[in-house]
Image 1: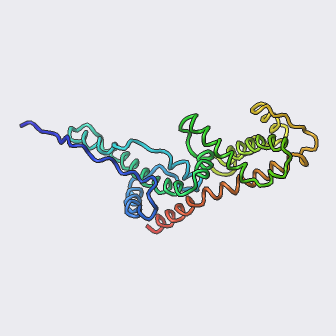
Image 2 (image 1 turned 180 degrees about the vertical axis):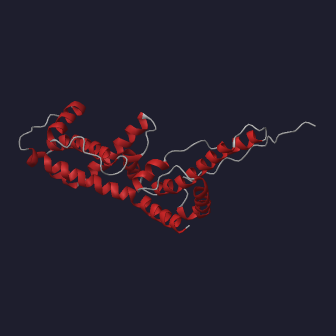
Image 3 (image 1 turned 120 degrees about the vertical axis):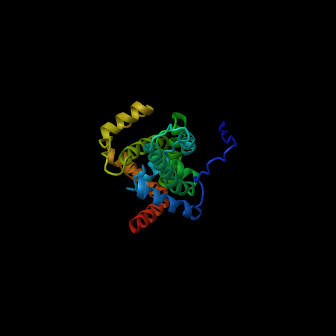
Length: 241
């Protein structure tokens, strides 16, 4: 007797991205159970790490494929374990993606520029462009500068954003790659063709650099705040389990 396979179209997997955190409680319970038994790939170390890890997504029909193949004895049990890891990762990642989606678009781009894995050069450049515009607009003291110095300070802000990104990637503690004023001036000249006078550096530009770093830190904290809430909730729930 010939076996007829079910060829009905399966419904697409429901994505958790953009779903309110309150609507994910059921999925979170399932996720904790799967993580407890099989482990997962997200590292709940910090909000920064969670931002990075939650942007990784695998195939949406992996488990369905494994079920189909198991009928014909073509699948190993280890593959089921790996698939459950992937499902747990996607469900847990959805909670952090929802937190990111709750932010204004400009802050989302700011955080993606700092922490998200590179999707493409075009997307990454767009994130950087929006992040730089947000940094510049958030620094109100720019209005105190003369017009020509404002134009120069804009590219200084670009350099500060680059430095800040390098310092926070992978968590805090990375050294500032352009801490030396000489190296920073050289980077600005190579990258943007901007030549700044080294004389009276602290009085002319040093304070601007420090101000822009403070704005980066302020925007970074605002972007990470909703992820920190989810992280605290998850760590508390997993500790209690």
